[in-house]
Image (tube, rainbow, N blue to C red; front, side):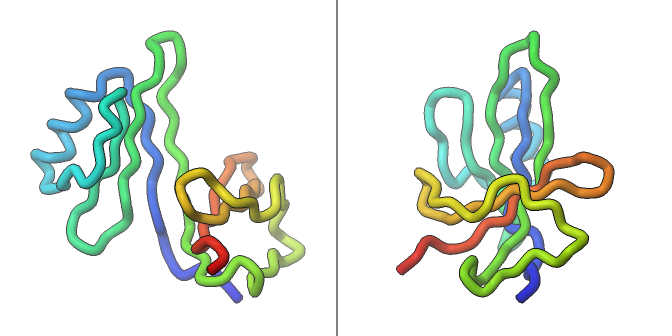
Length: 114
């Protein structure tokens, strides 16, 4: 079984308010706000944008999460370096981390076990 597209993009920012206004000006709607400098945006049926504020002394990063319909049926091929196997998350999914040939980390997200 392969991935089925982009589930979410995780964006870090130095200024939550400015980032939120920017995304809303582009047509994204705030679906969830944690009240502590992070939240989830979405534009239609597209991928989720998960935005979190980080301290000024840390470079803001970006991570892409790919959708996997069934974690138990997914098998990483020989060209995929698995960093961490699928694990349950505190936000109700199962997540695996893989590394691409250039060293970037990717997240693979599947629904939690029923």
